[in-house]
Length: 71
Image (cartoon, rainbow, N blue to C red; front, top):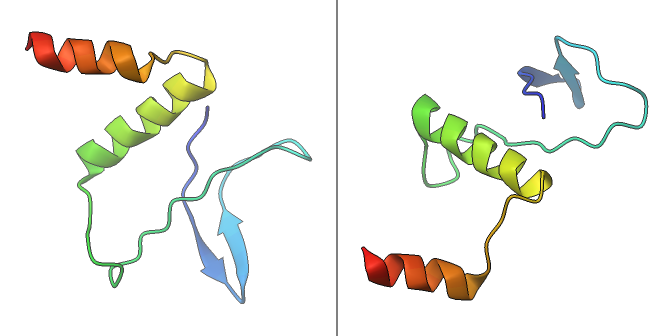
C-alpha cells in the first residue's frame, strides 16, 4: 500500500506520484466540516490498519472479543 497526498482541482484529483493504470485506490478526504478530525498520528494508524486488512492480517470477531476480555 502506498500513500499519496493531493487535492481536488476543477473536479479532478491531482496528486504527486505515479500509480499504474487500473490501480485500485482508496480516498480519505480531509473534510473539516464532516464533524471530526484525526491527528496525523491517528491517520497513520488507520492507514496501516487498512493495509493489514488488505494483506489478510485479520482476526475473527470472536478472537477480538476474547482479547478484549483478557485485558
